[in-house]
Length: 356
Ligand SMILES: *Cc1c(COP(=O)(O)O)cnc(C)c1O
Image (cartoon, rainbow, N blue to C red; front, side):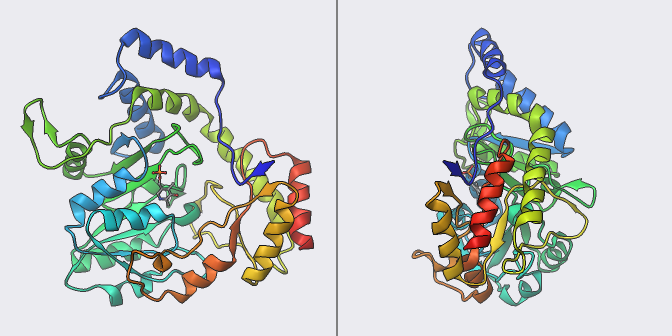
């Protein structure tokens, strides 16, 4: 069976060695030694000012919206994972969808200003598949209208845009360290920011608002990463170059062997060093997609319809009409992509798609 992704497992001995430290310390969570080591190694690896590792990749989005959203209208993309949208609604904010660019598949920055009202407080956009949004234009718009910018950078580990980590853009960036993501801690995630005050505001919020044992800075939640999660992160981090270069080989195979007379890929923004996080292909129609999917599934190969449906179609939102996102969501499918996919398997996948 070939799934769309497969979790990277570091050698078990490495994880055991980290666990020995945890047992020796008799310390399982709350700013433990391994948490501190992972945080400082990630900061160096990514070259960012502040990072707060958390227990998953959804809480940092909610925490950022709690700090910046003010229960107002949030300009967002309909083409992302559901966590982007659900966090907005969960934080009592109102999502206002802006359609996506037909080739980059990120939010169409030229349509943002028309969606701004007096109630708008922030822009929450996704660097979908690791492809950067137009961060410069978005910053200009946000500055002009006094809005905060939050990037859902769940797909962006290792992406460098104009010489800087993708996580360094926006007032805050969030990411996921879920088992299916490039860098993982089983479950996990992080909030990254460059500003000290923003860091403090988010740090309080992720630990119940505690300011010492008896004082409270304000409202908070529990989003703390445990030592068991940090242990996995410390074991996976040394493999990031390997993980990215192996995934690059898989992508290059598909680039060469798929029939792009009948399919399209997406366009990566200029000045981007990409991380090969996903391999989405666009069919000419949903019918063609379903045929190819069925063909693959009958051979025990399971691609995924990422991202479908377009989020403005979800039952708990008042839909804005986003025809481009709706059309793309109906025709896009992500192919299997992970470390260890062999040439024989890749040939089979490509042949089955080209035949369909
Ligand atoms: C994975 C993902 C999330 C959520 O991360 P979790 O760690 O699963 O909570 C949020 N946004 C996007 C775009 C994702 O792909």
